Image (cartoon, rainbow, N blue to C red; front, side, top):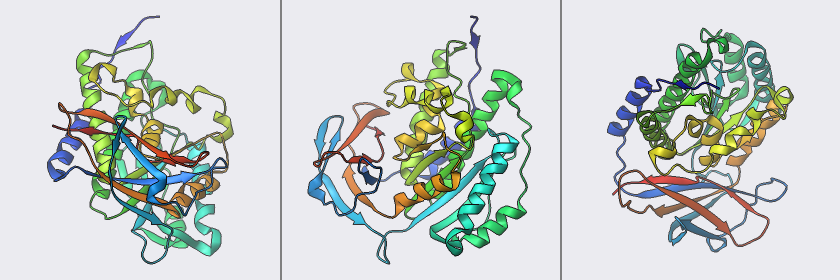
Length: 344
């Protein structure tokens, strides 16, 4: 099999992150973790206390500075959700079905949503937001009805270079969304409804050292951007059962481990599914019940825990630190950010 040397230097994407770094310099090293704890059945577990948790930073015990259990109510910190329709990487039929399912969700329960929600659409022209966040599902459903489904000018049959364009457009859109949400206080759940952007990783792709360094810098910047904006990302595949059992539903798992140095960087490390898991979110696929998947994702805002700690200094720039949040009670799983990049 021949290999291709791919010119992966998405300059516009890099420029977005350069602007982000200049506008959002973090004054201290305090890191906030939004933690959803589930049992073996996947149900959220309320009622835990700080004593039930222990935090490891690069396998070293780390002191918890503050702890809060959130179970809704007027005193709960603000939480908003953004539902993104990815029409760049998704065909016409699954895009239409996704809209029907989201419309069903928005109109359910008399149109009363569990938290403020806004809508955004990614087309070849970029990402565009609709109404301001609202708990009135009927208002959002009406807005969804009025918006058309943009046809992609960047098609799958354009091969690896067309895929590169779609990947760049997708990453720039997420970076811009994170930049916008950083100015909004509180936690945000971003539900990315799409078939997943191209991984562009495999034996047919040959990356130079320069390519890998560029990708590594983007991995660091995306991790910082999502963490600073307090975004938990969710990937929802509208292909549903039509995608069940295919590599698309599990190949991303090869890239979940944190990237420590440029020589390890691959484009798969920037997959939307990978970013979702690493942000503490989840990946939904192989189901046609998109309305139910949206409901399950937003349910993560009903009961969760907020933990803060002081991030460690790095021995050098962009030093990866793996986080491990352990629970005393067996059978429970903590879903939260899996790591961060420390600076000297």
